Image: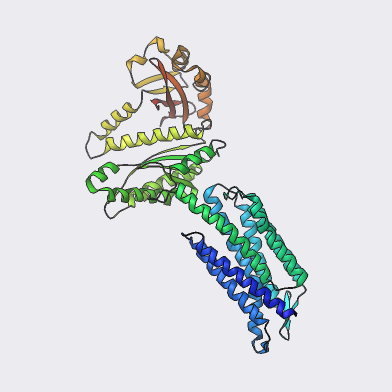
Length: 509
């Protein structure tokens, strides 16, 4: 068999393999993403290039079409680089949807593939990669450089595929390795035999197709299990998985937001469930537009949402304002407006709390905001008084304390708390200490309670510009202990020389 026949046979085999890949790409998964459909079109371009290249090796006077032949071979060399740029973005998108992953390796591979495409194109048009003489293609002086660039980019792909195999839920490494070896084999085959680069294109397509089918199928199943059908947000299953992941480590910039849609029951009862669905979707869209860029947003109940994201203080304040503005601007077809009650808590203000404890703090703040919303609803002069009553009803104890002078003022508290048996004293330091040592605090929580309610600790804590001190502990109610939360926040007149604060205690069990 002469060289031309070898080329033609190899191109026909390549064309058949790409056809199989195109069929598998449209058949394997019923629901296609836009990127998957784009890949089908890219495979189609590959097919056309392979078939046309096969035709070019048939006996024919190609001198009249030398430009077309040159362009065809250029496309055949450059196209694999474009395929790899596309795939690096596609692969990152699907892995990052399932779990947190560093973007840097994918960007490095993408830029390497982009560089490969640009350099290859320049090599081709300058005749440094190949040159045509009497319709015969010869290797150029930079062919070895092209091979090296190909090898580096393919090794990058192999690396990120194997490293992230478990994150892609593709656990069978043994099944992946042969597809990783295939492009290297094809590259060696190209070098040793001099056959056309479409063999390399075929190998790359096979690798891409295999991982895409694995990733897309798993993404489809992941979506079914983890995406809320009505809103498109992550569902409660995904939320619980995220909480489990965050039990290990928390970034200092982490923000937990508990969000509740106000008035859903009224909308359902008066306007119907279609209107209820509309307002739920409206709330989800407002939250998504504002916060999804910074982290993840979950629908954890009928009208309950959670956002877990990262932001510094300046950004968080901006996001709060943006969320409020976005909800105020929202208008639906069946419902004209919506409001949200939101409780934010940051890792920075509560550095000692776990993600589960941060969630409790955020929930408490959200319910406080919700209670105040309903207390202030309507226009009447009693609104502020009602709001004050609701605020007092939310807490078992509200004090205004001065830790500089070691004094306190009772704003609201049950008389049964003002007894010596529960540590009641004239100074706030003795009262807090006496309360703990009187047996009102669970023995397992006592050491931390005494440490954080110590006045010296609080003075240093708030002088370091902290905005809130949260203390979670179990306190005694009759014969059992229940979880409570003490929150201490600076008053408007607070200064380092005159440290006045509000102290709130609330049951959270």
